[in-house]
Structures are given as structure tokens and as C-alpha cells.
Image 1: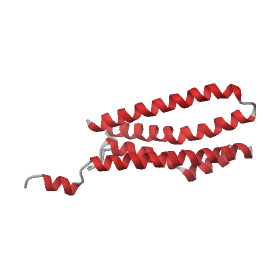
Image 2: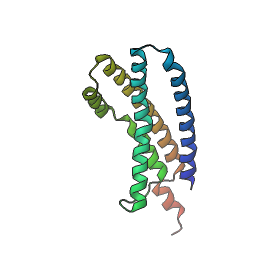
Image 3: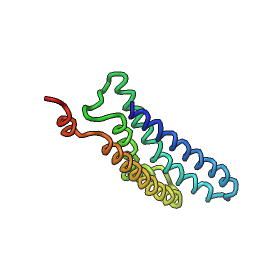
Image 4: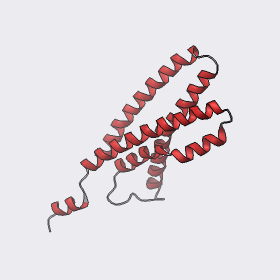
Length: 151
């Protein structure tokens, strides 16, 4: 139950941050001229995809797989661990660079996508590290559980 509260608590913060980013974008885009608007959208699109899209896709597919019986949650792991790992997955640096190189023809858009990849990977890496660090400090290890269990 604590995992659901943590995930729900963190999801609210992400939704708040995403709302602020979108509000800023809506305010800025009409002010930008031509190519600059496209560059900003390319960079922010990559960042949002890495930070939010990957975690959402991985976590929801994992949840669906467990709920339908396709997979089981590994022993010793909670949904908080799965969520932390899905946040950390936004560091998909190599594949993102490969796809950007195939998808973007304009060299300036490719550079902006690479900047977005770097920023998005850093954000995902830091958020994933902080979240997993917090979760592992809150979750007792197997040796601690064994010492607490009466023999």
C-alpha cells in the first residue's frame, strides 16, 4: 500500500511540473519566430519523451503484464522498485541518438535533439537514482527481514 501512495504522490508532482512546462511553452511559442520555435519543440519533445514517456510506458506495461498473469513481480521487489527502474530507463542515450540521426535531416534539428537527449537523460538518471535510493533506504533487505523473523 505504501508503494501506491509513493507512486501516486510522485505522479502528482510530475503532472504539476508537466503542467508548468506546457504553460510556459504555450506562452513562448507564439513569441518565437520560425525555426527557433521548431528547435525548442524538438528539444522539449525529446526531453518529455525520455523523462515521462519511457517511465509511463515501462511502468504501465509491467503493471499490465503482472495483472494479466503474463509475468510475476519478482520476489523482493515492490511496485516502487519497478517505478524507479522505469524512471531510470529514460537514460536511453544510445538508441535515442540513433533514432534522432535517422529521423532528423536538418543538422540544426539534430543538434537540438541531441541537446534534448543529454538533458532528458540527465534528468531521468538523477530522478531515477534519487527515487531508487529513497526506496532502498525504506525497504528492509532480506538479511534484515531474516533477522526480524522469529526462528
